[in-house]
Length: 216
Image 1 (cartoon, rainbow, N blue to C red):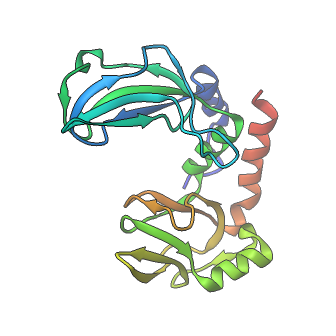
Image 2: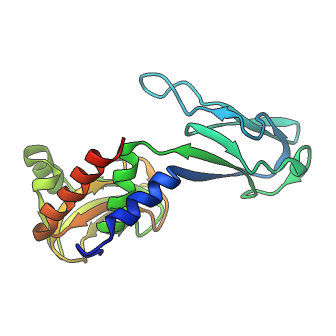
């Protein structure tokens, strides 16, 4: 965990000079590739009140005469488009483009907090839920008022129609940030929650306040 001596002037300067996230787009499966965007083109993620409207069409993969359309999940600009792969047969997981996503103030705060908070990561690829007792406390007091300690049952891992309790092995703290959505599959090793020691809460709030004040 980062200590209060972090040079936030340098961190904010870094974001000001390059306020973007670079999202690599890889093929979902094997097939013949057909691009539907151009280098430098603007793209949008899902729209609508419930994000039910698909984002910009990025590419198609044709396999056994069955075209599969892949749409964008974030907004930004197309960069590093691998045009040499147009019309070629590609394997699953092939990087074919990058989306240059402009960061909002909220995203910058979340990015900095991920460097400051202690993450608790998914032990396996599965769906996760807060344990019933912990969810009841969160509903009553709010997540940032709920302390957890080593050995506490904090999550339920749902995998292959089997629910398994997940116990917290780390240092005592409060649940400052939640990165998962209940019932949505999370990859192994991805952060589920960000833990903050109670004596560091004021420091964390100082970070948030400074970014809000200094970022336009």
